Amino acid sequence: MIQKKSRAEVRAKKHRRIRHTLAGTSERPRLSVFRSNNHMYCQIIDDDAATTLVAASTMDSDVKAQVKKTNNTEAAEKLGAAIAKKALDKGIKTVVFDRGGFIYEGKIKALADAAREAGLEF
Image 1 (tube, one colour):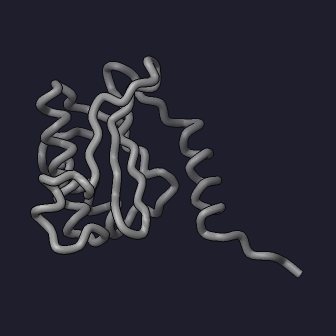
Image 2: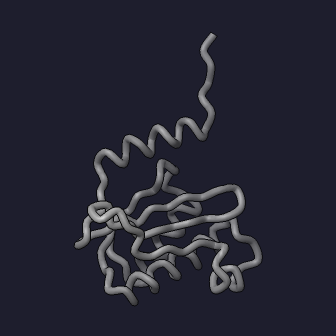
């Protein structure tokens, strides 16, 4: 009998495969996205120096105050705008988008589109 792998295992395997091709540099850091059942988190990471340059999540007070729920596309849009604003304040304009093994639709797409509209290039 064939056993079906859990969605979390499939996502983790996709993420490992994606990370073999993506790497953030100091000139073009990596925008990493993670979503749980209740919140979304994103970081801009310089993989060469192994440091997080900018981080934002739906748990931050500025994002949480703007939305009713923290796990829908509206919250993802606010988070995308917030991370882009923080990145531009630090002088980061271009990034590499790391969707973290998640399918590029719904919340992930909303976050990416909002970040692009706010000024990030990827």
